[in-house]
Amino acid sequence: MEAIQKPNAAFHIELTGELSDPAFAGKPKYEHVNHCMVGRSVVSSREKAEKRLDRKQRAYEIESLMKNKRSEDYQVIEEVFDRSTLMIIYDLMNKRIIEEIHGVVSAGKEARIYWGKDLQGKELAIKIYLTSSAEFKKGMIPYIEGDPRFSHVRRETRPLIYAWAQKEYKNLRRAKEAKVNVPEPLIVQKNVLIMEFIGKDGERAPLLKEIALEDPQQIFKLLLTYVRRLYQKGGLVHADLSEYNIMLWKDKPVIFDVAQSVLTGHPMADRFLRRDLENLHKFFKRRNLEMYSVDEMYKRVTGGRN
Image (cartoon, rainbow, N blue to C red; front, side, top):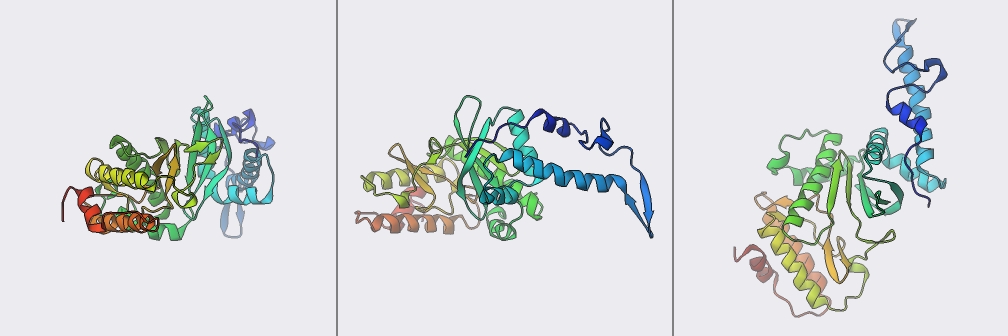
């Protein structure tokens, strides 16, 4: 798949507020509004023009973004890149944070992750949260409620999703500061999160569940150390830890998907922590390791707290 390149000059003009229709050449939006009577309702000619131009512009933007015009690519772009998201992507490109966007690396109900590059050619993971997922909204509320960092967030879908992206960024920063092996967060803007890409040449690192571990005992010890650091130094519980959101890269586990992670003071933190530890215990027990019990793991993570 060809890279998505920065928008051309014509699109930059539209971003400044100029209308591309010849009838409006040189005129800013929201000016020169004429109204006509249709029955008893007043119809704004500006609104008609805006709708027509939005449709044309959206089609143009999507076509410009995807050079490889396969139908499945269009479907993904139509679903993920709503107009607001397109503006964010172009803003990040204009700021030279993103230089290129390539294909989808991972697709789920909540988000899509694209492989990209910055100006220096460094690989990026560009995570775009879906703004139209009502099911996603229902699932995130238990993890946001009880977190004082997001007590002010309105319960409408879009503000919740913006808060979710912020939450993942902040949780990644906390984890990094606690020396937990997670992707480096670079920037978050509304529903778009830019992170370090874990992998090479657009191919992500394998998940723990996808590979045969050469030294499962060492990987288990490292993971327990990361969970302890996350809890004791980062003040967080992952709250959804399993072999599905741990990658193996350069012989070390990398924990990801931390948007749902909660502060240790969250009312559900203890329950979430035990669930995380049970998941790790089940995964490594199937590899015939001599292991701590879940209770012993819990004590080691929390510093002996019952």
